[in-house]
Length: 298
Image (tube, rainbow, N blue to C red; front, side, top):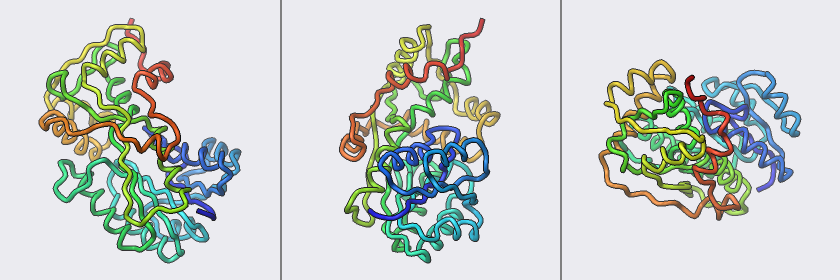
């Protein structure tokens, strides 16, 4: 693909920061990038230092999106887990179609069907249909639970040496991936010569049981960590103090789906094929990010 790529979420959000990493990867390849941010701050200056053009825009404000997409050939669309996905999708789809965009890569979730188990997954399905109807060469990167999500979940209680979650027993299997690997796949799809409209790329790095996740935390952090099952209601009540209601509603149903359904996931070859290297393991992530986990309580 030739031309400028508009990367949304380029400043980096709370979790995987895929937009920021996609910007870095594209600039390493010499690809022109227009980095979309909400505010001009130190993160925007960092993007400029990479050689990216920085533009301020709001997903839900059509004139600003119209300006952001003008003159670009390709778009990376990554909307955070919060209210507004469908409004943001329609806004981007119309602006991108009017601007003559020929490829839009959206970062969505692994399961995307009308009867998916969480409200966000069902919204993702509708969002994908809109992008495909727009005729802008939509392709979908389907990511599973980020390692960064597990870190955020663990950090709520890990100072006390425990991970509290509604996963049932510790044999429940969770499909996982590093945010960096998702970004690598997205960068590969954005720059590939031929990506048929409607293409889909599932991205799973590892499938680990809760027991294996907790064992990796214990080894990587050098201290004992145990797992404690809690009810859906207790987890959701505590989570509402840390994350928005949309994310709580999504994650509550997602954890229940992993707990209640047989394991049907396996690592995918997409990371190596499109991202250029084998997937990062959760143990490697914990070792690299050891300092970002909450310290043990005194």
